[in-house]
Image 1: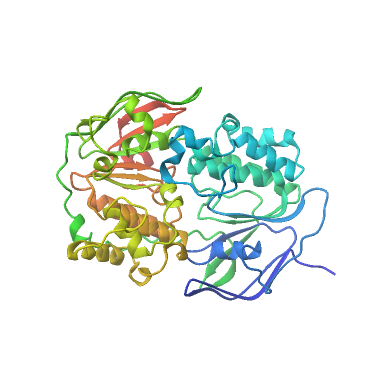
Image 2: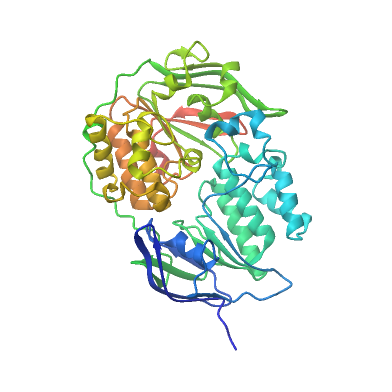
Length: 489
């Protein structure tokens, strides 16, 4: 008797206090490869995790896996976050740990992690080399897991998945954090394993999908609706919302040159990750920082943020002061509003949305101080601006990843910083949320505020960018003025 690969009947799932999926029905037949779209928070991630049997088994879901010599009889879910552990089997890491060479040795290397994974799943090492080459990851074999950036962790997840060849592969936002070439090469790999019999379901907002995708669906109002073609997130540009009053004027710059790097070099053992970088950021400039995965962007930003211990061994000036001249890390952070995938990853899981935003006043990963009236009003203004007022008492982790990112974006802005450091700020946001956020950035950057903005997506950038720095293998290959309209013309 014919059995579909996945059969879902009348599935309802609550997340926190909200019913996200309601009486959902969906059938995935043999030979079908799906892309699943939907607005941020619509339940895409929850649905894939439920199919894979993560956390809770749902009787409304039947997954009919069968044995076959070509691929593993497994349903594999690749989430948006890569969860790794230290050598003692614990995942208790902190944000700055990846830059601390002594503590970094607490984790496996990439090579050790992959060797163990291959042994546990009886995989062919020869096939791994081809995958590593395709995703330009062979040079990371000796890197500790804690040292990897978010984009590099995403690649490691995907390498394992493609190598395993599960019967059903569920990919939640697989393109997040990947550079353009890596996205293209990933699609080629997915097409290859699909031809071998692996079935794929992808959630994404990308238009460039693998050729193997032959079915399209959209989650709306808690239910899956089959479509005739891919429906990306709605591209409606949101109505201009008035910038919160406390952000309408930037603080007075503390120096004419906010950041100055002179022949900066950063090495981990024999591996040099930053090579003779010179970079000067003047007050009021808006910089786009770009480069492929592993080019050194995150390391460079860690110097600006005061998080990297090797900053003392280099000629680095922040806000008019030479690094190591008596300033504390908190003195540096008082000037900066920061968001990055890594900060999101390590953020306090027990904080509410309100506490998460308010913690930005103190540069902490949770709220440990009471706020006065004026600061409380600023939190409320941002809650309203980002549409999070109804969620303010929810735990941050109970929100969709898109809403979590909006809350942390609000945290970035809460103290009205003179320098914004936005490292892939729109990861997890749908296109409308991204447009809304970039519109806000353009609004507050019409003043003398200074900006560093990192993104792989050329189509989703603020309009006010004035300069661009491009890295390749730790070296500067472009340092120039920049005009987004000319770039897209």
